[in-house]
Length: 332
Image (cartoon, rainbow, N blue to C red):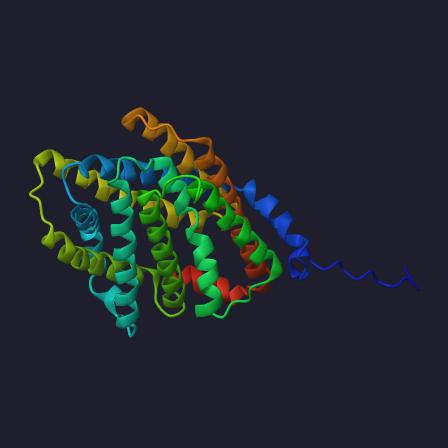
């Protein structure tokens, strides 16, 4: 009509740089079929991880931890053999071989210390998995010093709460020091450093390159300490160790695909399932009965780590550009 001013179209919600849109986007993503697949894959990964731990504990009655760690990576490398034949040498093109070496070295340390914890019958599977939830906390602290990330008040408070949960599990001064728990804690610190180095490598390296060097370097590096304490494995031991390698590959593939299918804020809370499965498997296979302090401390640690993950995902979502997302998909 004459004299009527045209009404300007409302801006599309995704173009409004507001943090209020993030929870809405998360709720919308939870109803997507791909998000459901991602959540199921994350649940599957927790099952594979716990069965890996149980198998390592079983064979640790006959074999030293360094040797079980070697066979874990050796059988995983065998399973990845067809993939190497398919992709050829292209994934090995890198200019950061030194950083790949350091990452693998930290990975070896984290793996062997975890196997040391699993080899101690007095340390329950549930406690080991509860303590492992501290890895994101240590990684968050390391990111401040290594990556220059800001330590804001909410993140600092979440870290304090998370580390308080760790004290609930250990209860220093009240209970005797759990040597296996200390090994598990050392492993968590090692995994945190692996996460930081992976984050640095991911800036310039493709995912396949990181995986390729990890598979080769871990097997080679694990062989050295394994050789020093070598005990000939029985055929039954080799069968269990092959299952360990299969669980390693399957679990990592499920996690990687889960994070492709859905947002981290949707799938990472399901990692808490590891504590549930570890409790069930520990009770059924090893007659382990976790004390309530493990559940309380593990829940506090996991809640703190999840809060930090969600906060960082929101911050990244607000800063991300379409070009960045496309580049991430290309590298994955």
